[in-house]
Amino acid sequence: MMLNETQFPLRHGNIAAQTFLTAKPRPVLVMLHGWQDNSGSFAPLAEALSQHADLVMVDWPGHGLSDHKGEGYFYPFFDYADDLNQLVIQLPLDGRPLYIVGHSLGAMVASCWCAAWPEKVKGLVMIEALGPMSERDDKVLERLRRSAEGRDRIKPLRPLSSVDEGVKLRMGINKVPDAAIRPLVERGTVFNGEQWLWRHDPRLRSESNFRMTARQAEQVIRGIKCPVLLLLGDDGYPQLREPQAQDRKNWFSELETRFIDGAHHCHLQSPAKTVEEILSFVERVET
Image (cartoon, rainbow, N blue to C red; front, side, top):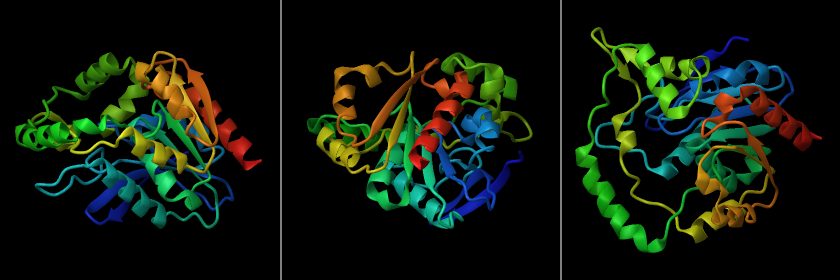
C-alpha cells in the first residue's frame, strides 16, 4: 500500500493529506489528528485499514505539510469544521459511505461537523474525546481577555538537534514507542540548513478565544444522527471518565464505548486493537 501526497485548496491556502483512494465500492475514512500532531499520527493504522477502506489522512491547517495561515490570523476552533467541510466537498465519494475517524482535537471537530452536516456522514469514530470542549458561561470574559493578550506573547518553537531528539521528546510526553511516533515526528519536522525545526505553527498554542457552554455542547452532540464509536485509552484523560462524561454519553443517540490499552495516544500504543475496533464498527454500520 502506497500513500499519496495530496493537496486540497481551501479559502486560506492548501491543506495536505496522505491519501489512498481507489475506485472500489467501499467506505472512505477521513482521519483527523489531534492538536500539534499531523497525519503521521495514523501511520501505524494505515496499512491494515487500507485493506478494507479508502483513506484520507489530513494535516490540519498549520500542522504537518499544510499551509500556515497568513500573518495576523489564528486557529479558532470552529474554523476547523469549515475546513473539514471544504475538504469533504472535494472528495471523490461517488456515493460511497463516508466515515470520520478523529483523535482528540480531530474528534472534537468531527463531532461538530457531523452534527452540522448529518446527511453527509455514515459513522463517526472518536478517539479520546467526547464531543466539543465546554466550560461555564461565566468564564467567557476571562477567556476573551486571556486569549487576546496571549497572542502577543507567543514564542517560536524550540529547535531540535535532530529528528531523533524530537522522537525522544514525543516518546516521553506521549508514552508511545519509537516506531509508532517516528512517522509523526518525521512529518512534523524540517531541516532549515542549520537545525531541525518543528513544522507546526507556533500560533496553534494561542489560547482559544471562545469555548462552548455545556448547553451548546449538548445541542451539538444531540445533533449527531449517525452511529458513534468512542475509543478510550484505559489510562487516558481522566476527564473522559468523570460523572459529567457519563452525562455527555447520554446525549448521543447511538453510542458504543470501547476501552483500549494505552493513554491519550492509545491508537499508537495499541494500533492493531484500534484497527480491529474501527473495522468492526464500520462492518456493523454497513450491515
